[in-house]
Amino acid sequence: MSNELVEKKAKIENLYLDPNNPRFADITNRPLMIPSHKITEQSVQEAALQRILEDRFEVKQLKDSILRMGFLQVDRLVVTPLPGENEKFLVIEGNRRLAAVKDLMRDRASGEIDIPEGVVQFIYTAGGWEDIGYEVVSGSFRPGQQLTIRRPQANSPHILEKLVGYKDLVHCEVFSDRSSELAWVADQILVNIQQDELSPEEILVITLDYNNSKTELWQLKQMLTERNIEAIRP
Image (cartoon, rainbow, N blue to C red; front, side, top):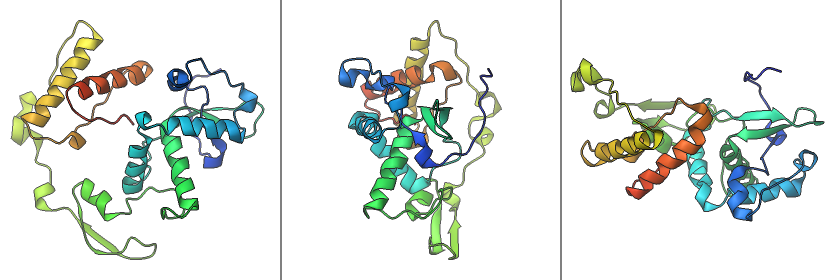
């Protein structure tokens, strides 16, 4: 059996939250053991959705981001086929993103929000464009209407080598353990905010260790919280 990931398109109604998500263990105070044949049951999925909508999972922030920026193609989910189910999949990576989309769909069905039909791959609000440095000059975000946006000169990025020089473009450090490395990253982010005058929204942390990324990014998030820096893990 191959362990390689394969790109596949699936309907949102055929994607199911993981009711045995390890993140739920401290909510129920016991390991979750929902059998696979019950995963698609509405009551099981509703319970999983309500659990992951708890404030500490920060799904509301994801919903706001999707409304403003759209669900970008890089935000892909990792799924596995459900045994005995045709074209139905269990999400093993990306449950928060799936919960955000499903909750947005419920909000639209109830009339609370208005989302254009189809998969959103376009930023369709003025605020979304302003978040990435553009401004809306004229036009409408309605389908079929012309829209003009522009990027002000003040928001155009400078060439990095002119700002810091070629030698300082990449900085390398060596650490004795991972915790020390994460603490250094948190301290550097604090320097970026307090001395370099960056806002938290302008800082992105990427880990190349896929197998341990969940644990380490949560650990880094806690370190940032201790430094009074708000962080969101996608």
